[in-house]
Length: 404
Image 1 (cartoon, one colour):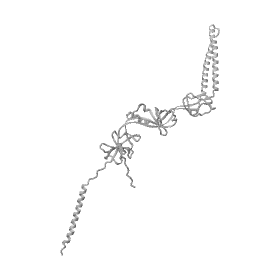
Image 2: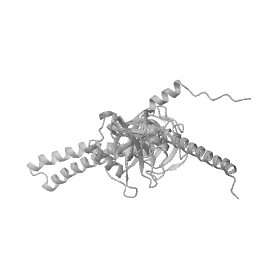
Image 3: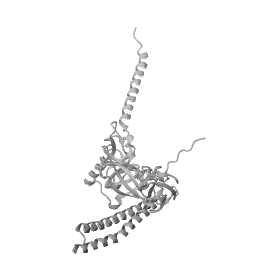
Image 4: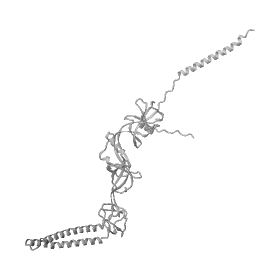
């Protein structure tokens, strides 16, 4: 029995149609993949600051304490009883002003007694001098012995010496009598009195009766490490720092609460020796103190000028990062628009900027915004940080309205 040729023809037709349709799909897919172009890579935009060296005054803050410009402890120079205290505690006194009066009676008696003895010796002098002169004349005629003449001459010398002795006793008694008036040796502010009227005092006693301190001007003694001094000298010898003459001696003072003192001080001298226990030396500053705002013993900070850096390189602190090892680094955009990493040596912070000792040069463009989206060797689009900030201010971004 022969197969039916008419029944197999539809099956073959369907197979051929399926193959043709699959071919069309394959051709269409190949043409589509070949015609599509890859999306271009996005170059990140970063904000940069161009390094421009400029002159910077370098200062350092040093801790210190105030002390009186002059100080005198009041002590008696004779023994006696305090008759009267003649000042108000905490007041200002002038040099030579009477502070205490010690009972002068015994010293007045001693002075009068010495004067009387001096007068007695002076009264004896003419008589013994006349006797010696007569003996000298009689000796020529051998009316008196040579021994009598020598005794008379010796008596004159003794009386003259006695006169000189009593003169010194009178002067000593006069000085002691003057010491009963205890006066101020310097002008200044006097503190509390350690004795009252009727107290017994002794000459040159260990305890002071009171203390006078001159407060205008006043000293500020600050300490600086010897290593800082050596560093400054090396920088000046290398030409990295220069001094500005008289202005280099001007010192600003910060009070204990951080507020600036209104008047500038002046650096007077540096100590000539270093304290071996602390490795530091003392700088003394003279500060005007007309209102007595500064008192002895107060803690202050002195802003001392180290020198002037003529070509200082400053970079914003936001443009400096740290490596895992703690090394400071900065990202710089080179002339080809590629990112380069620089390892920096930082000197100190000046406000919101770092003073850079090495690692950057004039003209370098340091990335300060957009560092998280870049890496060394990658291309970037650099815009000026100041221009970007100005554009954001002139065209502020308005947040979209919230739908109700």
